[in-house]
Length: 90
Image 1: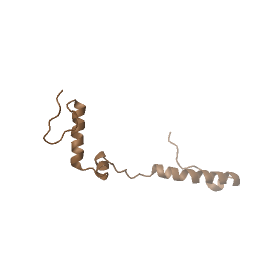
Image 2: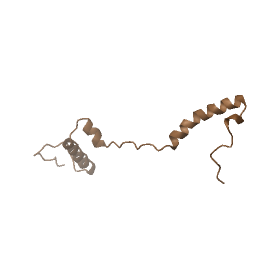
Image 3: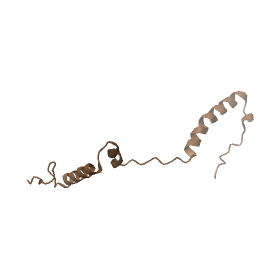
C-alpha cells in the first residue's frame, strides 16, 4: 500500500493553537525536504596532484617523489639519489 504524500488537510482545518504549531513544523521541515529532494551539484574532485601543484610543487618533483616512494615500498630503495649516483647496495 502506497500512502499519498499530500496530507488530506488544510491549514484552516486546525484550531488556532494547532494551526500555529502546524505552520511552525511545516516552516521547519519544508526547507529540509527541499534541500534533500533537490539534485545537488557534484562536488569538484581534488586530486593529490592538484593539491601539490597549488602548493607550488612541480610535476617533475612529484614524479621523483613517486619513484622514491615506489622504490621504498617494493624494498628496492635506499636513501635519496641524485642524478648520476647509484643507490647503496646492502
